Length: 447
Image 1: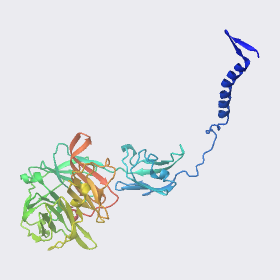
Image 2: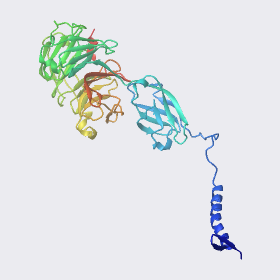
Image 3: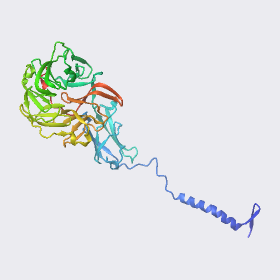
Image 4: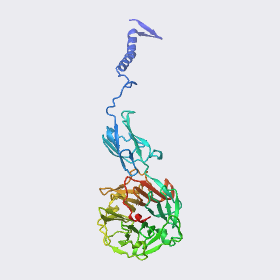
């Protein structure tokens, strides 16, 4: 056998062959392995099967969501992508919504907060299949602004009470702790002082608890409660008249709230009592107040007289409960409370500061001390839920509710959170809802 000289050593050809094989065979094996790999999957001209793509066929409510709409339902096919585990594939006006329910044929979302430039304008509702990049379905929709600030009462520490005339559009009347009554036009631009401390001499008017227009020969009578054993009546005009002085109408015990029935009869509420007086409250200095039994609650935060199916109903709230029952000039049957915060663990430590009632008898509540919300609604099943689930939509500093005429609901706040740590006093926020409020009968006497 021949030998090969490598350096100073002699190595046989057999040995050289073995060494070459040790290097060459692995290389050939690797080459064979790679030659069996599949081709690259992506091809620029390759079509994608989109038969299962999402498709939006409609949205409810149709055309637009006005301010009072709390939920929006997207209708279509193949909408329940990934069985609802992926939450990044639905956008409304570029915003990711909060989901209530996800099905293949429908997705229900809670009303989202949009940027101001998106309200009242055409926006897109998009659903994109995350498995099919770029394959989506779009639908044009419109979401109305949830509301706006009307009337700026900067520098006033407390807005005590709010009332409206019977005009269309309505004017806003605010009684403030500085003993001024401000009349503000509907846009919230023109503001006039119609009563001032020269009219409201007594210190009582720094703590008005409720006010309402009512009957009287002047057709401009404004009635106020101040948590004392009397009700004030004063004439209000469109401009300041310093000769107008309040008339004190004595009641048997202190009263905190008042309202009128459709005939102009006055009902007042205090701790554990309700009183009734006929339309003579509009002219007489000494009307007769009769006691009505049946109310067992604490300090009334709001009372509303609403005629339903021909029967006059009283809604009345203290800081923890709301009652409803038929009322006459001699009796009130409240029964068990419709709302009881002591039975609501999620509202522990919270208090009712005001209520309102819509034309269908649904109760809206202003609740204070809650970390995220101020406006709540009593649902048909008796539960108490936030009016809007997205906590960024409405101010959480609201303290009082008042329904204007028709569909206008007002939230009154003595401190308005404009940034996380900045508060501005004296704001009124108006919502244009998708329903009418129960009418205030006293306003029908304002001419």
